[in-house]
Image (tube, rainbow, N blue to C red):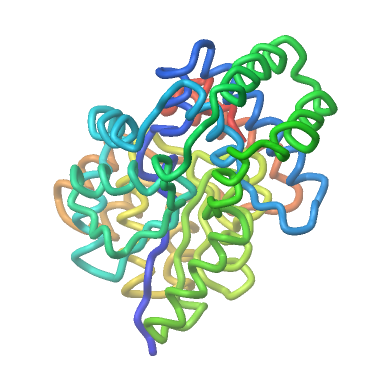
Length: 339
């Protein structure tokens, strides 16, 4: 089957949100800083290659503290609906790609946020994979609530790995609310690759017809899968983790460049994309005009010229430094610095 299909991460390539960070920052005192500490701890666990540990598990680790501050699923829904912030161009990008080829979101974000984003943008919710959360199904004992409030304060004071690891492995793991943590399986890391495999299996796609875009540590396995199978693997305003795993690095304040790449891939395949990038390096203006999708998108791309680079072993650090500037400009430094 020769159908091309496009799978993307959500937060980064499509939206500027980090929904779980923003929820934490809004509902929990010093919640943004606390979430960032847990995110760094999560990254360290991933880097230690602990068997069975999934990138993106910050979304599990924060949950007892959501309960400790009395959050409900309705809080998550209401907050998400009121705080959808898209990358420039994303509405037109989503519409264009959905019109030309099968388009999927595979996101570590909670399903409540992904549903709210789909409702706002017109993305087909049935074509999404996300972290399923049933927050209201679990009760929190008052004594556990008091302990969690004290643990939050202690971690903010001492955010060393050993201290955080002690609390999660020796204290929280023995609480009843740990059942909430165990109930959640983040769609990150291997989970994103498994979602792609499920898409392929259900639709009889070929792996080499995959285009994937992501920006963080949760995208590494998906980016590597697309790259290893001769598809298109794009780090979009990505951090060092995604750049190290992808074959193409794009930095841009406008994501319509992804619509153009998807259009070229859909019509001309992987080789056509690399031919475009080669032409773009020589003369961006001519390359964009020759590959024009429609006048509106072309005009936006001419006004917001993206930087497109083929990733090699030798330029990863250089591309990371370049991407940091745009990543922080688009998403803000606090979110941009998250893994």
